[in-house]
Image 1: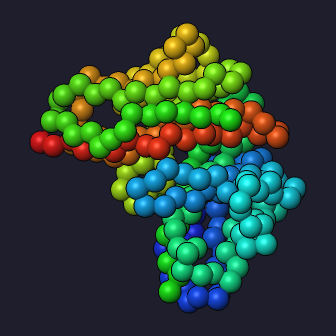
Image 2: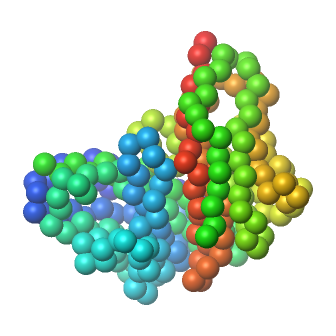
Amino acid sequence: GAVVSQHPSRVICKSGTSVKIECRSLDFQATTMFWYRQFPKQSLMLMATSNEGSKATYEQGVEKDKFLINHASLTLSTLTVTSAHPEDSSFYICSASGLPRAAADTQYFGPGTRLTVL
Amino acid sequence: GDSVTQMEGPVTLSEEAFLTINCTYTATGYPSLFWYVQYPGEGLQLLLKATKADDKGSNKGFEATYRKETTSFHLEKGSVQVSDSAVYFCAPSYSGAGSYQLTFGKGTKLSVIP
């Protein structure tokens, strides 16, 4: 149980275009979803936290107008990178939590999406 | 703020060697403690967790004990395999703003050679 999927796994786009990444919890209801960014050989950086039906809470330094997060249902969250530029190229990983209360502190991660902006 | 210090890698071991990866965290409240593993090109997988002092998390031969007195959660395995080659992340989970947030260490890359 506790499977999280992401789509697409890889995407290459031109500078100035927008890219949408989907994160789905396949076998549980995710009341909270998280979006992370990971640079090569580095740790994960939390970008934002979203609760179903609420606006996302962004970490300091993350542009909310550039990284649009929608968490419209208990199984789906999307991250849209608007007007992407080469510096947005990175590995984006989502995670979800929302199992029974006893495991509310546990996040389950998706496989990640490799974004390359040309 | 909350932080975690993890043993720097890379760590290279021969197959069947004993593994220890050290992890210490700041003692803000009573976090749950996690180890996640990341295989090349993939997302993170939950390896094990412990939720209170003296709890021992274990999975796939890996173990870690929640040591409140030393604020540590060191990862150990008695006999590593080539398939254990990956990056390991220690992460305490702190509650805040209505959710539990993970604070990740920098990760320790483990390479196991035959």
